[in-house]
Image (cartoon, rainbow, N blue to C red):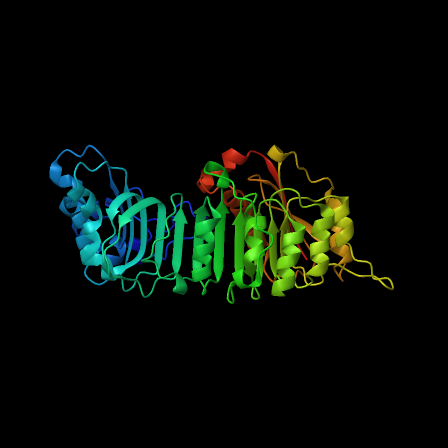
Length: 444
């Protein structure tokens, strides 16, 4: 049976929501989902008797269907055959995209009605397009809901989602009251205004990870409020990871937050040291991981953050020059104060499109690593031609992994760094979009 499972695609479909991957119920259909059934009658029998092979469903409703009945997916014979193969008990991962202009209101209302018999089995539900009505009822095992440019006009009560923990909303944003925000632990939002954003966060008290892309330029610009009263602040007791993308988002959001559990901060925006230090002063968090991909964070600001946050183990930054190298070089003389004593990994990502270059050669970097390595024998590993990327590590790196694992980790970081800043692109097209770029991965 494993052979049959590996004939399908296991690549997660992020739905243009960075790393908000579906909670998979089985493999994806792949390019030729029926190919395995055409080998012989025995293979067909086995394939059709494996519900897991058919538990990931990707349906698309197009305009200009040839018959009136086909406006209603409950009458779509191919979809119904697929659902039948998924059996009666296996969990389902359903993605439905609709770009149809339904001719009647009844057809608009019934666009999602086909999921009603299966709603108690849906584990991940991803929707894109226009829907008149979200079906009511109990989604008892639904763990993830993703809405990408989805418009839901009505939602009859009651709607129950007791297991829902992960939500992603991209593009069109509406504060849907049927989502149990108080139990959500992972949230991805692409928003244009601070008003619904703050309202959602204030209700999402169980959040562990919050990922926000903010683009106010498409609608209007809202000036940040730096004079926030204490009773207006939002205390997120459990939030460990915060990812923010957008030039105004840090200045706009930070004054409202208190984040005592924050350990991973990722900023794809401009740097505002005053609002960051005010947030840290209120929250007393100890970061273990910090990523900055943007502009306006000077070398002095970067080194100051390292100095004030000795707990950091994992750091990603967009500049590497003699100032940064000098700050990271250890001096064991009397009275010396060595930065980042717990640092395990430093990733440098510079893009030629931004006229950023790594202004130091490998020997200078090696000397810095050697100053922090008791063995004094760092070395360089080559990652191959995919990126202009080097891996430099100490003789006994704190991250315990072999050379192959180091290279795999570094290349994954390259791909994620490009993809996270261009979330409308798939990973393959990002390589062409970004052009040439430099990467240095340092393992201490």
